Structures are given as C-alpha cells and as structure tokens.
Image (cartoon, rainbow, N blue to C red; front, top):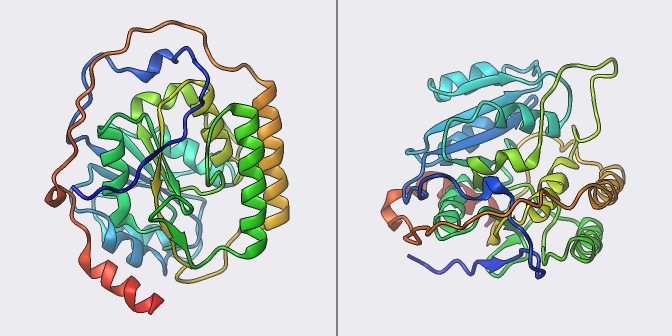
Length: 300
C-alpha cells in the first residue's frame, strides 16, 4: 500500500472520548462505504462523478434540492441502484443532514457533485479510517494534495480560518473549508445533526456551507481521532459554483464562534477497544482508470 502521508489533526490536549467513538465490535477491515452526494442542477456533472466512484461501494445516496434539470433522472440512468433523497430545506448543510440520516453502511463519505473532487481518492479515506482514524479529513494542503481551482483570496481566507479554528479547538487542521471527508457511521450521533422539517424561510443555521466547519469542530470536541488525507481539487466540470467567498467565509467564522461557545463535548468515560490496523489491498478499491485519464486530459 502506498504511503499517503496521513497526518494527525486531532487536539493536542487530553480529552474524554465521546461514547460513540468505539463501536461494540471491532471495525471492519473492508467496511461498507456509503457515499453521500448533495445535488442541485448537476445533471451534466454526474456522469463524470459516477464514472469514477469505486465499483464496490455499498451505496450511493444522492440528496437532491429539487433540481429542475433532470438531475434525479440522470442519476438513476447512470446507476440504477442509486438512492434518491429529497432534502426538506435549502443548502448543503441540510442536504448532508438528510443524507446522513439514510446511511446504512459502516463508513460515510462526503462527496461533491460538481466533479471538483476525485472519487478514486475514496480508497485513501477508507484506508485512513481502517488504520485507526475516526474522521478522515481531506486536505488540499497536506503533502500530496493540491488544487487547480482555489483562488488567492480563498486560500488566504482559508489559512486564517484554519488558524482561528486551531487556536479555539486545539486542532492542527490545514484545510478547514474543504468538504471531501469521511468518517465511521457510528460517529454520527456526535455530530448531532437533524434534518428536521421545513421552516417559513426554508433555511436554518447550519444548512449552508458552514456545515463542513460544524462537522470539523464537533469531531474535535467529541475527542475523535482525526487524520488529514491529501486530496486534489479540480475546477468544477460544468456550471457555476454557489460558493460566495465573503458571505460563506463569514458564516464559517460565525460557526467557529458558535461551536466554541457550545459545550466542549460529553464527559463520559469509555474503555477503548483494540482496533484492526490492516488496510485494504490496493486492488480492493478500483482506481477508476477511465475517469482518471479524463481528468489528466482536462488538466494537461
């Protein structure tokens, strides 16, 4: 197995682990992987994304925000076994909460639908989890990662948000605002995410892009073992991103403040279990060579 230069990003301080950190049985060496993909008018991008998803994932859950371009129909035509979930409010955060509630696998992978993240990297995230991490945090700035999409302004803002988060939570994140992550499904209770019901304005705090920051901080507060995994970000294949640098940057900053003021996590002692550290063989998770070749052509 190739060394992917995983790095420990958990808090330096001694913490009392959340009771959901350890399952009742040892973790699977070949876990069932659930891929959660939020979508809104991503019909043109789904063929690129689905082509690179490893063939042996347990399930693909598409959480749609009521697209009008045939996204759901395209998803079903590409992958007949896809699970479709309609989100009940607006925003990426609500989509992720709705998708997480439907997961039946052992591992949850958060994957964007715009083609900016390479699904072939799922193997890296699963390997990090099997090796002992609770939360595998994707990073464009870890050794082996990178981006051909991030602007100088976004990189500058991300750097400062990293510093603030690390100072507040005792972590050592290098890429707080990157949304390609994976974690064990039994960690979901620690996130305390509830899709809830529709409100009069259709959106609640936590329903937007700040969801990634909320997940990062709650994993740290719960004492989860956090590992950063190098990841490469590409420009979206089709369409225009809904990300707004200033608006979403301030929402992330607010999320850090809100999470810091909330409880630091449940103080319930647990007894760690012995976990297997074996990683999947290189040929157990297909690398989706066809999609990789297509990406290479796009970035050449």
